[in-house]
Image (cartoon, rainbow, N blue to C red; front, top):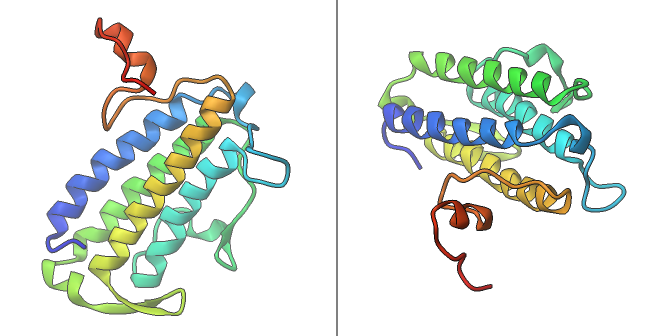
Length: 171
Protein backbone atom coordinates (compact mmCIF):
# COMPACT_ATOMS: atom_id res chain seq x y z
CA UNK A 1 0.00 0.00 0.00
CA UNK A 2 1.34 3.39 -0.95
CA UNK A 3 0.97 6.49 1.21
CA UNK A 4 2.54 8.96 -1.22
CA UNK A 5 2.14 9.31 -4.97
CA UNK A 6 5.85 10.01 -5.33
CA UNK A 7 6.63 6.65 -3.69
CA UNK A 8 4.47 4.78 -6.18
CA UNK A 9 5.96 6.72 -9.10
CA UNK A 10 9.51 5.95 -7.99
CA UNK A 11 8.78 2.25 -7.45
CA UNK A 12 6.82 1.98 -10.71
CA UNK A 13 9.69 3.45 -12.73
CA UNK A 14 12.05 0.85 -11.27
CA UNK A 15 9.63 -2.05 -11.75
CA UNK A 16 8.69 -0.94 -15.27
CA UNK A 17 12.41 -0.88 -16.10
CA UNK A 18 12.68 -4.47 -14.86
CA UNK A 19 9.72 -5.48 -17.01
CA UNK A 20 11.33 -3.90 -20.06
CA UNK A 21 14.53 -5.86 -19.32
CA UNK A 22 12.49 -9.07 -19.34
CA UNK A 23 10.86 -8.13 -22.66
CA UNK A 24 14.30 -7.31 -24.12
CA UNK A 25 15.59 -10.76 -23.10
CA UNK A 26 12.92 -12.58 -25.14
CA UNK A 27 13.81 -12.99 -28.81
CA UNK A 28 10.86 -13.35 -31.16
CA UNK A 29 11.92 -16.92 -31.99
CA UNK A 30 11.23 -17.88 -28.33
CA UNK A 31 8.12 -15.74 -27.79
CA UNK A 32 5.77 -18.71 -28.25
CA UNK A 33 7.26 -20.68 -25.35
CA UNK A 34 4.52 -21.95 -23.02
CA UNK A 35 4.67 -24.28 -20.04
CA UNK A 36 2.21 -26.57 -21.81
CA UNK A 37 -0.34 -26.41 -24.58
CA UNK A 38 -3.31 -24.26 -23.69
CA UNK A 39 -1.27 -21.96 -21.41
CA UNK A 40 -0.03 -18.45 -22.06
CA UNK A 41 3.13 -18.02 -24.07
CA UNK A 42 5.91 -15.61 -23.18
CA UNK A 43 4.53 -13.09 -25.66
CA UNK A 44 0.97 -13.50 -24.37
CA UNK A 45 2.15 -13.00 -20.77
CA UNK A 46 4.04 -9.88 -21.84
CA UNK A 47 0.94 -8.65 -23.66
CA UNK A 48 -1.13 -9.38 -20.55
CA UNK A 49 1.12 -6.97 -18.65
CA UNK A 50 0.37 -4.32 -21.27
CA UNK A 51 -3.32 -5.17 -20.97
CA UNK A 52 -3.30 -4.79 -17.20
CA UNK A 53 -1.44 -1.46 -17.18
CA UNK A 54 -4.14 -0.18 -19.53
CA UNK A 55 -7.24 -1.87 -18.08
CA UNK A 56 -6.78 -1.91 -14.30
CA UNK A 57 -6.27 1.87 -13.76
CA UNK A 58 -9.58 2.51 -15.51
CA UNK A 59 -11.30 1.06 -12.43
CA UNK A 60 -9.88 3.88 -10.33
CA UNK A 61 -10.34 6.72 -12.76
CA UNK A 62 -7.18 6.78 -14.86
CA UNK A 63 -7.54 6.51 -18.62
CA UNK A 64 -4.34 5.02 -20.03
CA UNK A 65 -3.28 5.28 -23.67
CA UNK A 66 -4.45 2.16 -25.46
CA UNK A 67 -7.77 1.93 -23.60
CA UNK A 68 -9.56 1.58 -26.93
CA UNK A 69 -7.95 -1.88 -27.30
CA UNK A 70 -9.76 -3.15 -24.18
CA UNK A 71 -13.08 -4.94 -24.65
CA UNK A 72 -14.76 -6.73 -21.73
CA UNK A 73 -11.61 -6.32 -19.59
CA UNK A 74 -9.42 -8.03 -22.24
CA UNK A 75 -7.10 -6.64 -24.85
CA UNK A 76 -6.91 -7.43 -28.52
CA UNK A 77 -4.43 -10.06 -29.71
CA UNK A 78 -0.72 -9.29 -29.28
CA UNK A 79 1.27 -7.70 -32.08
CA UNK A 80 3.72 -9.69 -34.19
CA UNK A 81 6.96 -8.85 -32.36
CA UNK A 82 8.29 -8.46 -28.86
CA UNK A 83 9.57 -5.01 -29.88
CA UNK A 84 5.97 -3.96 -30.53
CA UNK A 85 4.86 -5.42 -27.19
CA UNK A 86 7.65 -3.49 -25.47
CA UNK A 87 6.69 -0.24 -27.22
CA UNK A 88 3.04 -0.67 -26.17
CA UNK A 89 4.13 -1.36 -22.59
CA UNK A 90 6.38 1.72 -22.50
CA UNK A 91 3.55 3.88 -23.88
CA UNK A 92 1.03 2.51 -21.36
CA UNK A 93 3.45 2.83 -18.45
CA UNK A 94 4.26 6.44 -19.31
CA UNK A 95 0.56 7.19 -19.73
CA UNK A 96 -0.21 5.66 -16.32
CA UNK A 97 2.29 7.97 -14.63
CA UNK A 98 0.94 10.93 -16.59
CA UNK A 99 -2.58 10.07 -15.42
CA UNK A 100 -1.42 10.00 -11.81
CA UNK A 101 -0.14 13.58 -12.04
CA UNK A 102 -3.59 14.86 -11.09
CA UNK A 103 -3.65 12.75 -7.91
CA UNK A 104 -2.58 13.91 -4.46
CA UNK A 105 -1.53 11.80 -1.51
CA UNK A 106 -5.10 12.17 -0.25
CA UNK A 107 -6.43 10.61 -3.48
CA UNK A 108 -4.71 7.39 -2.44
CA UNK A 109 -7.24 7.07 0.42
CA UNK A 110 -10.26 7.26 -1.90
CA UNK A 111 -12.04 4.05 -2.80
CA UNK A 112 -13.40 2.65 -6.03
CA UNK A 113 -14.74 -0.72 -7.08
CA UNK A 114 -12.37 -3.04 -8.87
CA UNK A 115 -13.31 -6.60 -9.81
CA UNK A 116 -16.20 -6.65 -7.31
CA UNK A 117 -14.14 -5.28 -4.39
CA UNK A 118 -14.09 -1.80 -2.84
CA UNK A 119 -10.45 -0.83 -2.54
CA UNK A 120 -8.48 2.23 -1.62
CA UNK A 121 -6.51 3.58 -4.54
CA UNK A 122 -3.30 2.94 -2.60
CA UNK A 123 -4.10 -0.77 -2.48
CA UNK A 124 -5.19 -0.87 -6.12
CA UNK A 125 -1.83 0.58 -7.19
CA UNK A 126 -0.06 -1.99 -5.02
CA UNK A 127 -2.09 -4.75 -6.66
CA UNK A 128 -1.13 -3.45 -10.10
CA UNK A 129 2.54 -3.61 -9.19
CA UNK A 130 2.24 -7.02 -7.50
CA UNK A 131 0.37 -8.42 -10.48
CA UNK A 132 3.21 -7.37 -12.77
CA UNK A 133 5.81 -8.96 -10.50
CA UNK A 134 3.79 -12.20 -10.33
CA UNK A 135 3.67 -12.56 -14.11
CA UNK A 136 7.33 -11.65 -14.55
CA UNK A 137 8.09 -14.60 -12.27
CA UNK A 138 6.07 -16.86 -14.56
CA UNK A 139 7.99 -15.46 -17.49
CA UNK A 140 11.30 -16.35 -15.83
CA UNK A 141 10.26 -20.01 -15.71
CA UNK A 142 9.28 -19.99 -19.37
CA UNK A 143 12.51 -18.22 -20.28
CA UNK A 144 14.48 -20.96 -18.52
CA UNK A 145 12.49 -23.63 -20.39
CA UNK A 146 13.34 -21.87 -23.66
CA UNK A 147 17.06 -21.85 -22.79
CA UNK A 148 17.12 -18.10 -22.19
CA UNK A 149 18.86 -16.31 -19.34
CA UNK A 150 16.55 -14.03 -17.35
CA UNK A 151 17.92 -10.59 -16.52
CA UNK A 152 19.33 -9.66 -13.13
CA UNK A 153 17.46 -7.11 -11.09
CA UNK A 154 16.72 -8.24 -7.54
CA UNK A 155 20.07 -9.99 -7.43
CA UNK A 156 22.21 -12.10 -9.73
CA UNK A 157 20.73 -15.01 -11.65
CA UNK A 158 22.74 -18.23 -11.69
CA UNK A 159 24.64 -17.33 -14.86
CA UNK A 160 25.74 -13.96 -13.48
CA UNK A 161 27.83 -15.38 -10.66
CA UNK A 162 30.59 -16.54 -13.04
CA UNK A 163 30.79 -13.05 -14.54
CA UNK A 164 31.47 -11.79 -10.99
CA UNK A 165 34.19 -14.43 -10.57
CA UNK A 166 32.17 -16.38 -7.98
CA UNK A 167 30.56 -19.75 -7.71
CA UNK A 168 26.77 -19.78 -7.91
CA UNK A 169 24.93 -20.65 -4.68
CA UNK A 170 24.29 -24.34 -4.09
CA UNK A 171 21.05 -25.70 -5.44
